[in-house]
Image 1 (cartoon, rainbow, N blue to C red):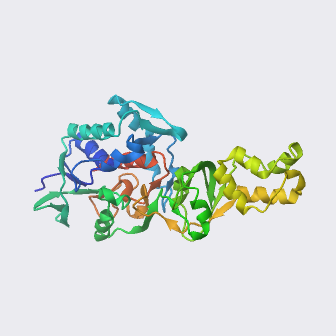
Image 2 (cartoon, rainbow, N blue to C red):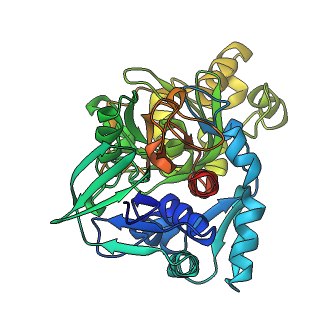
Image 3 (cartoon, rainbow, N blue to C red):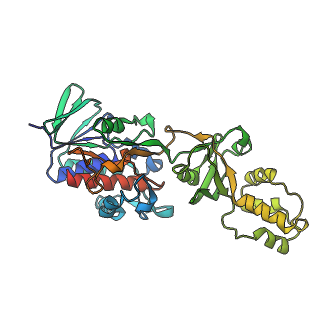
Length: 390
C-alpha cells in the first residue's frame, strides 16, 4: 500500500508546478526538498524580481541534444498560460527588453502563488529533509527522508542541475537517473561569465565598462550588452553565447554592430581630418575605445589612410577575437547545459520510456533556454506536462 500517488523531489519552479497540477487533479502528492523553504532559486532570479517567462518563447531558443524535444510541452503550456496564472493572482508585472516579463514587486509573489497552488491541490510538503535512500520494487518507489520511508507508484525528479551550489544545488538528479538506467548528456555551466587569460590583461583593466555588441560563436550570434569584468567578460551577450561556446575556441565580438560595411571609407570622404579615436569615442566608452586603438595599428587622420587600411580596421572592429581561458563555473552559472538525456524520456509526459512511473522535469533534463525567462518557461511547461500525466 502506498501512502502517496506521486513523490516529487525538488520544490523549485518545475517541482512546485508539477505538484500543484497533479494535486489539483486529485492525486496525493508529496513534495520534498532538502532546503527549508521552497523556491530558493526563484527568489534570487531577476535581481529578486523573477524574470518568470518570455513572450517570445519558441523551441529554437533552447539547447538540447534533441532540439525537437521541447516542442510538445512548450506548445501545450506556453508563456501566455503562465501569465494568465500570474494575473489571476493579481501579481503586477512589466515587460523589459526582448520579451522578458518581470514582477513589479518581488519574486516572493511567484513563490507564494505556487505554494498556494500546491495548497489547493492538498500537496504535502516535506522541507528541510534530505533523501537518504531511493529504491524501487513491486511497482512502488521508496524514498527515505531522514528516518521515514515514503512510497508511491510515481517519482518525479525536479532537483535541477549543479548551477549555483551555494543554494544547495547538486547533480543529485543525474545520480538517481543513472541508477535507473537513464543516460546523461555531459553537464556544463551555462549562462556564465567568461574568464580571460593574462594575454588579455588590457581588457581586464576595463572592469565595469559595458557596450552594446554582437557576439558570435560559429553560426550563433547574440546582440546585447557585454560587460568587462576584472576576470573577463560578462553581461547578457556573453552569458548567452557561453551556453554554446566550447573550450579552447574563440568568440568574435562586433563592437559597432550598427555600422554598415564601408563606414570608415565613407567617414574618410565626409570627414577626412577626423581620427579613428574620435570616431570610436563617439560610439563607445572612452576606455574601451582606447583599449581597441592600442591593438589597432593606425595613426593620424582618416584622410591619410588608404581604403585598404580602413577596410582592415573595419574588419578587426567587426570581428574582434577573444579566446576565453574558461568560465566562472557552476558557482556563477545561472543554469546547466546537458543533463538527463531526452532520448530516454517521453516528450509528451516527461516519463522515462523504459522505467514506468519515473519522470524528469525542469533543469535536470537536457533542455536549456536562453537568458531572459526561457528556463522558467521550460520549468512551468515540463512541470505541467508531468503533472497532467502522473
